[in-house]
Image (cartoon, rainbow, N blue to C red):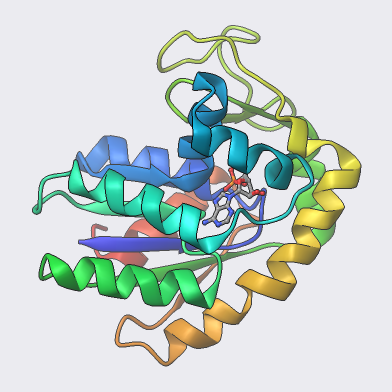
Length: 216
Ligand code: AMP
């Protein structure tokens, strides 16, 4: 099963992906998390991506496709995959179809999470992320059990640099300009698009997400 979680920054894709990946034993592939670990490790890719990420711009498609291709090669052919934050452009979506086809796979389901810009800005200001396992918390709505520590792996949580107000505004704009066209791309694709209203509780969204993916 190959699932794409589509939606603007802060809508809850990471939270939902981690939860489903944990319960089903699927792989959670977040290009944002992969890029942040490249930054921390100081790799060439990390250095190439840094400026784009800090400015809230997209990292060039060619770099992203190399990263995804390499990551997919390390996953077994049967494992379910949840793509979170990828693809983000129609070029990446076409690239993904081609990469999956090489191993006889395809995108099965695309889930579009939706929320208003006001709600997204509120959520991003309180967001804290685990740099180790990708778990996501919100100090107002879904705090960790121990302040500042990840419930899953104990790592110190971070407030991402690109969650600062000025950068958030640009990221929302970039989403509208470059990623929102993917809705039409996937509506015309055999996978189709299932919409999930994301301004509900995490549990309510998760119920709708599971139903959309067919693991009710
Ligand atoms: P995210 O954690 O998904 O919000 O991604 C954080 C930042 O990483 C984005 O604002 C982009 O700069 C970069 N990024 C992550 N995924 C992609 C992608 N698929 N294409 C281009 N840039 C990406």
